[in-house]
Image (cartoon, rainbow, N blue to C red; front, side):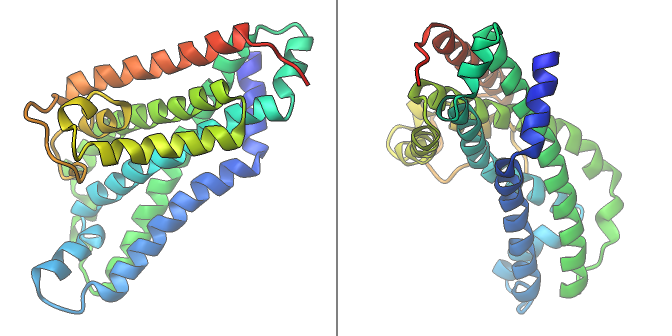
Length: 268
């Protein structure tokens, strides 16, 4: 608990925390405002689809879909940035010199990352809902559905599934940066894996469906969130099974990161 609280205090003060998740919330607001300003200019189907992000209750799902979709990329970058800094800044060496367990310290650090990520996603969602309400007013869209109980009742499950998936994606970045022992290498490799998997899904959908970032989408289940842009596998995974595999990837990534740290030579 002491290491966890120490890591949490450290992350709260880090500019990377506010820059990473501030960009996520900022992009969401910009998109909503752009849609509100231009999406309602016509009566065609494309205009109606564009305005779905400011039409409640559907806006709840649309905003959450954006956060959970793009949030995975930001989680990879954030996890890699934090893990890499432990090596490049010499923080891990200092902790080990104090007699702390290497693996316990790394796991406590990731637990702090998971808590910060949860808070950031909740804040981003609240900001997005507020922006959607303002955008709806600007676009002349009624806010009658903002209190829809059925839509609000679905949100906790969707958010929980998406949060687990995003934490897993953060763990991937965390593990990669730990193996590379570098922030830049970890971030670069994490981003490459993120986009590389999406590109490979065009050609190998039945194999890619078992890889982490595709599993993160499948774990959300059939809903208005939608899927990726690649071909659909012949036998898509069920949401519950995908969520189970997400947990396997999460635990596996942390085991790799902790195991490598426990045996790595710390120099510098």
